[in-house]
Image (cartoon, rainbow, N blue to C red; front, side, top):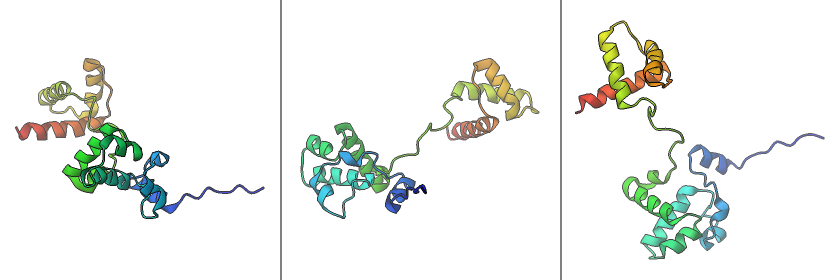
Length: 158
């Protein structure tokens, strides 16, 4: 018996690629999203926008609307603030994962700068073992290069 390939809906594929896919469209119980073709509970940006609009324009209760749109009250406030500050782009989920060099603290970077200043032939690859020995932190040489560049840029702007 041949195995059937699962073909994903092209809109779901596009929403996922744009980081706009609502992970829980089944939680949206608002009648507009259940009855109208235009509204799509799978589109997180559309759901969040309509949730904020219903409170701010139609004067609906935050608690009731957040629940009907499958979000918590704090999520409503986050969406409203993001929409006010960044427009629709603010409603798009951010990229997952850490932001910046969280292992390389200011203290470590200042120490690394001192090491580089006292030893002109030392490069980021040579700092890997030195940082591990001094601070117990293992990082990739390229991470050190990027963090030092950010650190130097930040130091210049002071």
